[in-house]
Structure formats: structure tokens, C-alpha cells
View: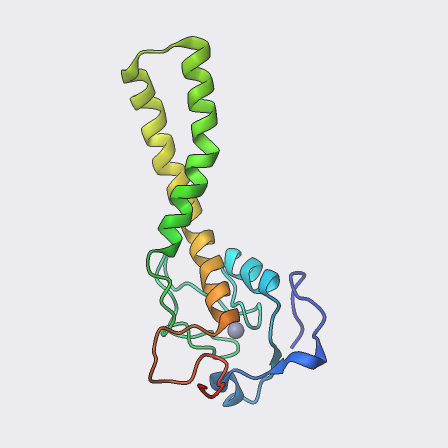
Length: 157
Ligand SMILES: [Zn+2]
């Protein structure tokens, strides 16, 4: 299969076949961390770059429709909201402080303007940040299930 523009050249030293993908007869190089997270940000499968990570706005697809990598076992949990709050705060707090110092608007105006803006920015950031977390989890092979071998099919030590 050909990859899209976000694909990188495969590194033969890190050949890796996700167990669920091996059943399809497909083989993908283990993606570098940056590539896996970029694919996740774009809502694409971090492993193959072709399938979709999400089946709805924030719900993970059970598995990639292209390579079969199981996303249903991944547990991004609260990491995405944590990083969204961190990012939104760093994006919006400097202009809030600057406008407050420069124009001294009444507090009700702050609330009317900034609270909806925070809600919009956080909503827009949630999906790409969760996708990046899924990419990170895929790259690290963290499934959250200690009974199973990890996503890469490596045997536990
Ligand atoms: Zn895939």
C-alpha cells in the first residue's frame, strides 16, 4: 500500500508487524514517535497512516480499517483533557492579561468573551490532542491491559 504525504521512509532496522495487522497479511514499519503522533493529530492510524482513529468525535474506532491495529484496547484516559487545558491556558491567558492591563474592561465582559472562547478552543483541541496521545500509546505499545502482550506483540519481560 502506498502511504500519504505524512508517511516517512520505512526503516528496515525497526521492522514490526502489529499482531492484528499480520492476520491481514499486511506489514508496516514501526513508526517513529513524531510520525505516529502527527498521524494521530490528523485522525489517521498511527501505524499505517491510512485508517481512521476515531469512529465519532472523540470515540476511538475498535480497530483500524486499513491495517487492523486494535485501538479499542488503548486507554488515553485523562491525558488529552490535561494537555488541552495546558495548551488552552498558554494560548489564551497572555492575551487575557494583556487586555486586562491595557483596557481594564469590566469583569462581566471578561466572562462574556473569554469563557465561550475557552470552550471553543478546548473543543477544537480535544480531538487532535487525543489523536496525538493515541499515536504516543501506539508507538510505546501501552495498551493498559497487563494480561495481554502489548500492541506490538512483544513478549512481556
Ligand atoms: Zn492502520
